[in-house]
Image 1 (cartoon, rainbow, N blue to C red):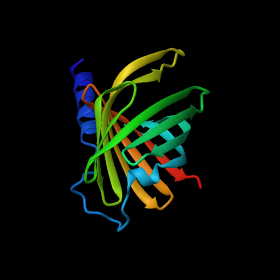
Image 2 (cartoon, rainbow, N blue to C red; image 1 turned 90 degrees about the vertical axis):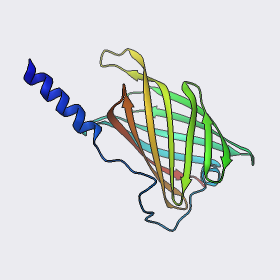
Image 3 (cartoon, rainbow, N blue to C red; image 1 turned 30 degrees about the horizontal axis):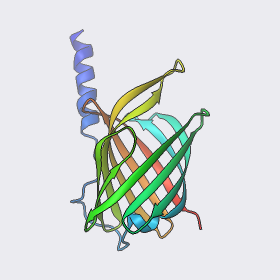
Image 4 (tube, rainbow, N blue to C red; image 1 turned 135 degrees about the vertical axis):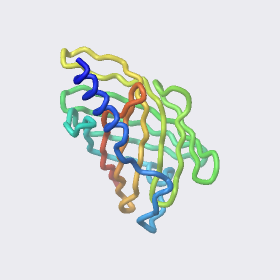
Length: 181
């Protein structure tokens, strides 16, 4: 019994130490990301969720429609998962200062906070997320997202979102976004 507890504790500590990006990391591109410009219009993306141990559990396509009115950015995200399920999230983002953003969406607890820095954007929020179980039921789980986006080209962003539940990292989501012209 002690051995199992020791192994579980070791895995939890290892998962908690997985490296993540930081705004203290040096910039590796001279591009500048402006969220309101990139996400104004139609965006398509493909992504996947994988566990902290690397097992891919779900893949999906996402279509987004963004509208920047000069004050707020409204993003409608429509997700289509490989298992046939769908989800929609509607974000309202407001620029609060130079490179600073605040956002809300249904099921998001409080405000999401974002920081633009060069070609990257860090977006942090807590959400009550519907998660399907193996038995076909869906449970709501409170998940903390530490979301990172990098502008790779004028029409392409790579997004990696690190996920925590109950204070422990349990997986991440990777998405490639492309602007549709």
